[in-house]
Length: 130
Image (tube, rainbow, N blue to C red; front, side, top):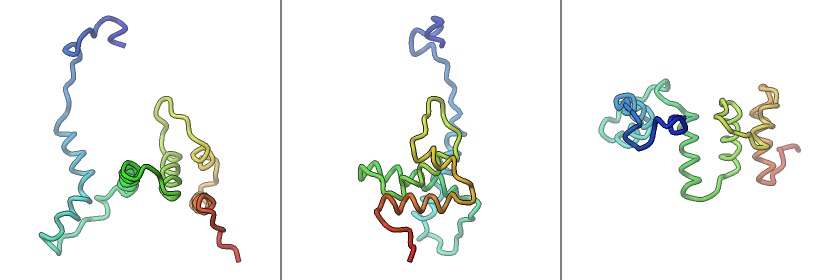
């Protein structure tokens, strides 16, 4: 918008004042589980409180790293990612795919069962009916 109005013509016209302390706090919190495990040999009695973990965010990051290395999602990762997106607020311009849209329509009490069924369908497995 500033460029459209002619207020921003060159990089120096952008007045950014990053909050480096907030950035540092974010990454310390985000990396806490990995650093805890990485340095666990230093103090075998140290514990990491469950309240300090952000399991879903950690799983999303792990899934993204796996996709980056392997080039594909596992069915479990794909469904988990869409489950996570289904519960999230959409960023501007986001259009949910078929899986995400379906999960948003499911009764919350049936969400986990629906996710399991989707995974089993993707893997060509039955749903355990005998």
